[in-house]
Length: 516
Image (cartoon, rainbow, N blue to C red):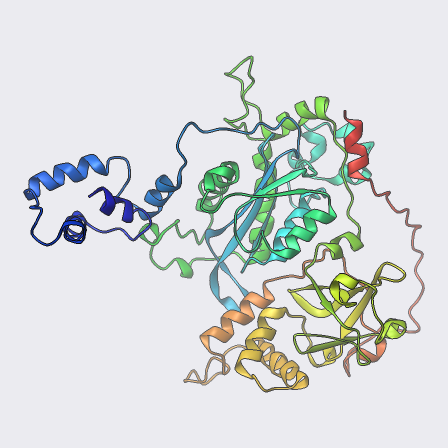
């Protein structure tokens, strides 16, 4: 029976009757049939109760697996004495239905990051489906200030909070209009074995910012328990107060939740950003004064206290820094340009590099390409000779009026496997056009504008996923503007534009050494 209980640790939940049958099978395999006689049912139940005590053998499968994977001995804990010294990141489905484009209700993924020393939720991102670029975007938002939004109460401003606003303002002038959420530069990030976090793109982003990347062991959620608990707090303190709350399992879900007035993805992201600022001023039970255990600190108060001893310097990310955090691939530069997933990109700035070797021998002289999965209109080529980035636009961009991501492109490629690049571009444009037109007036079988349920979901997720880069790169050349579209007017009056003074970019690693 001990063997039967051990086998059930990682399997699906079964009843005691199955365990009794499995016990008899093990006895027959070891000693032969009929050699060992089983006791009465009452004795078997008493024996099972003793052998499975505290193991949830006939209970929750998730709890049983967690208890089985837990190591022996007392738990240890790594202390963090400075902001950013140890941070944790995780992703989970949010227990809220949102209204995607075209009115499609769906759940979204929540990816968040927490600082262990201060319990600060430095950033959180909502996406229809989590990709590796979302982890990089979350990392970028962690090291940039959160601006105040229209309609937010002034009490949420950094100038009204417990944060050392005056001292930080001397370092970075952008904080004058920032919300009360600290900017923390990670030194070590702990993640699980999810493919989003252990991807090559996220590892490259951590390497670019000089961050130690530390994945936990497989099935070891307790090794990043702070972010696990934080995501649970988002559900109890934020998600359950929203329209469209589904509960964390089907047993707790109400009826006709999708018929409620649901938030859009952009609106829900703004609500979450505002709630994070409120969370930063809420006293946290894990932040108690060692000398006065009855006194609880808020994350902002703990951050202000640690700044006195550890120091802090904010880091400003430029547009090139955001491009560095995007996914990368390696391609050859041909006479016609660069091809990625049957899409061809080209620009006149690429002329000196056509059919040339990059000089990167480890990559077979290919060129490093960065791209945004949520916007296929452009890519960026690293100039290995002169440095910097070269922006290339999709040659079929004039065929599509609205930007879209790789989700719609890959979906169309699967439905039209033998189509050319022009045919695929027209098919995606037609898909987005029919989705925008809505259902026909007939109300018959074709009243959904020829879209299947899968088509509508793909279109909704595509339009609900904004580009990852927060800065708008230069627009496409004039000769690629679609016919009939208005371009920049030649006779437009000149405006008096104020002189732009660029903010200096701080080196976090040089400044971090000063705190010692």
